[in-house]
Length: 411
Image (cartoon, rainbow, N blue to C red):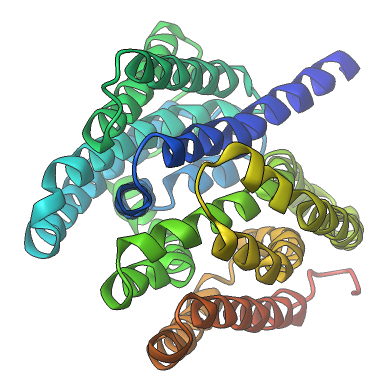
């Protein structure tokens, strides 16, 4: 049992290290291969791709983990969620293509290819979540490794033959993610251990759809309050400022490996505790808040000390603005870290609509502040509004999470 837990932890660390270091590093390498304006365009395309991934995911990955309570999901649940995912993907694809053709016709190829890569990644993550629901992280670990290794090799090959440009780099991302999807799909099809079927498919489809709507709303709103500012930067300031801001923002995002590891390991565990041991569940929540706060201060300090050196050494050109942006974004690390255990508690205790209301308020505040500040303060205005929105959300989330006490416990 101890070896199994150690392997689980190792695989999660491998997954999140690649998610927050290897893939971001591959994208940041592009700063040296293309112009800062093209890097801004690539970054905006990746944000559209991220929306495609989130919307087509539709809260399904969280649902399959929560509904399984640490056991292998039943086959009918998996097939129901897969059908919903296909429908969500079709709807999302049509919406995103409409946006691209209407607002970004000059970037149709790049943005379309990146969104296709997001669809491939979305189905890979669906299969990974199926195995993660009963704490099998090996499939995701291997799939992520195959994808990232392929991406690095493709980027190196493009550089070697002097064919690295925004079109070929976006295509490389698509090909790499197709490799990950191919591996996970083959593994899933060869695995005959899907659980027994229970319940009526039609009724379960309807009930599951209703359950997923608030979860998907939360994930889409999360994307909106976090990334809508990039589109406003592009509108007001242009792709060059998007590139400088994204260089800083992606360096800060490297620290998010800790809360992501926390979510991967603790969501299945806390889901099981919430069902079987409410007292232990609340104690885990308290301990997690303290641990994540301490870790956030350590990561923020390391980022402050190392970010300027890293930018100077790794990226050609003058990125003085990006170095200043990193320092101003440091509070975001603390806010995102302590928000991780609060988010899990809100998810498990079903406060979806309250969370949606909080996010809606945050989006209104963020967009309003950006519209007022960007014309006068530029990217600095975006940073001020981003920090303000995260403070507001953490206060609202904590109030929501601690308002209702599970039966038989005290907080």
